Image (cartoon, rainbow, N blue to C red):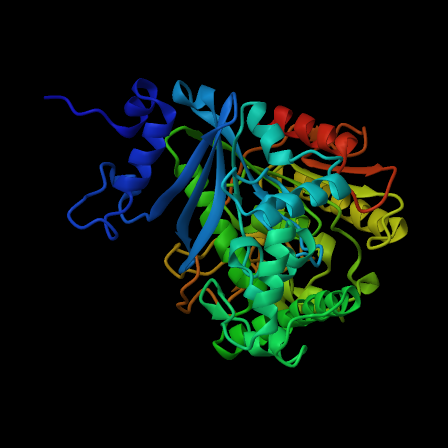
Length: 484
């Protein structure tokens, strides 16, 4: 008897059943005695929590393992995926000092999501995306879209963040329940991944001396106190991980790499057509991911690029993006040496108060120059200075090369440089990170109309820190050219 593989099943059975089977077959650890049906999926953990038909695509609420933690995510799958492998985009949410939602900043929450989360999501979409949930828009255009929560956001946020959300965005009943919760000293802060983020008795009970708020002013004070505590809680996350020898932003990068791998492995995804998108902090995550993931073929980064000298790293918000070794040694636009030759799109608002046009323009020019230089020196292929050619792939490091050195000007001889993983170990040492391959495909873009072939596109738009419809159209055009 001939056995069907996963790809054949996906073309014969309904999409929802196909996804459920994929998740169940990946649960060899969670479901005793159930072996994975495809060797490529063996050992993967995925749980399908709920699904809903959105007319042309399905919204699946899932969890999966990434870098040792359980990650909550929405997976949007177009109906066309039942018959053909589709292009896919990993979408990475922003920071925004709003922690109650993460993936919900890009995806319309499921119908069974709490009311305050749905309201918070709608407000965020109106503020930054012209009322559009961008992931839903891409799914409706035929893309498989995966949107995970980063550590300390969304379903991985603290109880403080959820209580704040209930007070600000909940209906009357939710607010009453939240105030009652705030009035007592009992309770514990929920987990963000595996990290505890505080004590609920400090969250509200001590603020209000263990009693219910009696007026609007006191409620406003509680909301403000909660917001400040959540914001400062970023220091606790960073310090707690540091005490365990980990770096918050590096952990997020590892999770994003695992998420890209998970997305590329899905039976209805064309793994040669996987891109990444990010807005604000998500853009920072996007260009790091494009540099270190072998599964991402292109990236669109909106509203996060400038020269390092102009960047204010004093805010707690920087802690979720700070990888000390990279930050100390390299300027931000030098990431282009690691993303090359992948097609990349960078978009910035001319009036963005966080990323001044002058600094962004200088960074854009530097990235263009890097792509042109590398394209000319290597004939469209990634030069030796961009990866560790001596690495056997067994060291486990995320490698970056000696930035600023050409192929013939590296530190340790012709065509070779000194390469170190972001974990801090050299290529001759062993670490626990993921070794990443490099795509050597030539690119098809021009950088300045001179005919030199690069894959770097930089765009200024009118407006501030925003990803409205004009920017969304630019991003969709980019993905159409790169992934279709």
